[in-house]
View 1 (cartoon, rainbow, N blue to C red):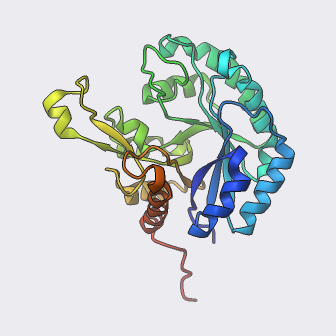
View 2: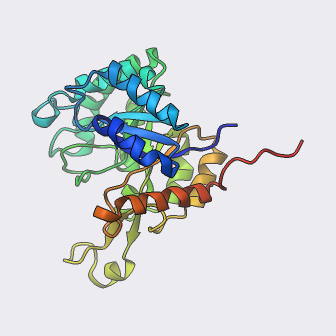
View 3: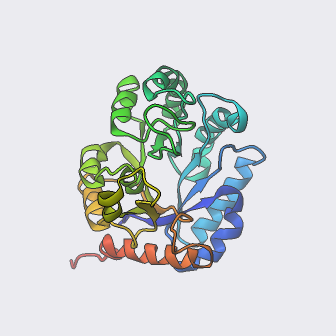
Length: 294
């Protein structure tokens, strides 16, 4: 019986070095990130080594992703569109059917002005993915942008999701969702997940803490921070509720912890925080699978 696996994000270029060090802690899946480009990597050789290593520790590769701006193809994102194509073509080598990343956007333009270009680029990519049995999932991260301006991603607001999925009503296009990025915008993640769960293909295990006392006293434009990204188990979200909603919708993916953001469990405490999150999320799912008596 397959259970909802709990894992973590690993840089693809470091996976062979990192996985053996962290696998004994009990991670069950690995979401591989390629930064903004797959340049310099032999995906066939890399996939073979990484998949064998994960299997050795009874884990799977849950998704592979590239996080540049495929709509512009300039600067640091010059190779991003080609990287999307390469990952879609190579997903089966990693044993996954999910490729993740940002939508990109027309830089410093309102979200609605990016929709035609988004439709053009991901219309072709979604067809390419469908032909290979691959699903595309967009992370819901603003990357510091908002509705009117930004550099990387339009898929960070439910109004944008409505426009995106209306422009491309493809069954293989969905979300790489996490509560943190919505909480930063003061959105309640629970009713949002309940509404959008059928479009959630992959979940990042990242939470947030909202300082409502700061907001009530100084608002969101003052000098004091009012929200922090957190490792699950240290933030405000009820992950038992999140997992319940996912399971009620027959979610087949994983929850992979996105570390390296917590303001407390960082630096030498990074893996302390991640392993706590791993065990906490396993607890929230009900522990390990126990077969019923015959």
